[in-house]
Image (cartoon, rainbow, N blue to C red; front, side, top):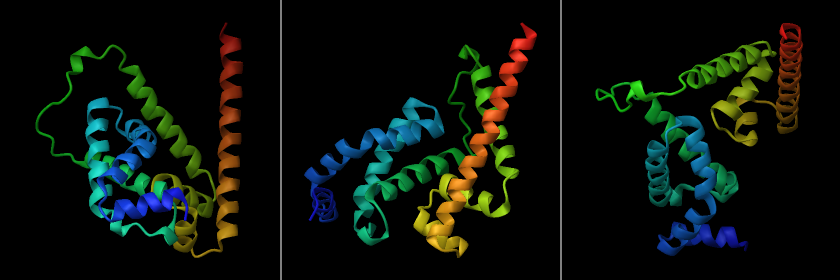
Length: 185
């Protein structure tokens, strides 16, 4: 039995030491996921704590046969963060908008997202769906191929082809921007 499996079994039997070891092993990666989505350190720290509380409470729901533990924990972190951000009923202003030194960064992030979304929309429908399931819905390849009702190998080729097309689109955009910058000098 691998060390990870033994550790997870201890976690499932509510061994607090195992929770600490799991936290040490996975917290940095999960924090990275959360902070990339919410972009606020205080909120990210709270969501990380929330994530580990859920991991502790729901550890018996983890099934070794359905995928890696990190993937399971990643989905918990991602879902908690997205659910937090979806709440639109925040009545108290939590940010002091007057202290932003660079609001263009926030606008640039939104523009990058819109460009990506536009580039994805140019892909074939099956490539769009594959990317959406894995990268936006957080499914594993195994889960997503079942969702699309195609063989796993076919699904993996969809992802590979879609990523290659996205990469080529961005290379063209970057090349165009570099030429434009040279011309404007």
